[in-house]
Length: 108
Image (cartoon, rainbow, N blue to C red; front, side):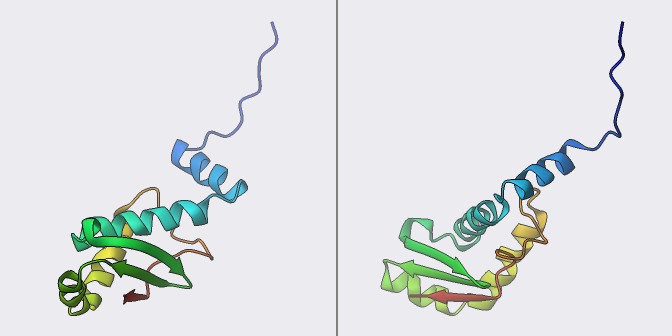
């Protein structure tokens, strides 16, 4: 009976991160996680008609002028809360060069 050589074991979370990096899936996944963090933190998911993320800037289009006005006053707090949510998210790749934490929130 032949024995299979055992390689060094790695945690499943590390294997998943390596898989995502190998197939260049970290940026799309991170973008999705940023959008989900916006929905969770802002409470304005039902008024959000469009989302776009590039170079640390999260662009949000809101369909309600009242909601947009209220969100404008909370932009700094929303950025902090979004980033805190992302820090706690195990699926968010912290060291991705293309999609990282939110630096600026632009509400239209």
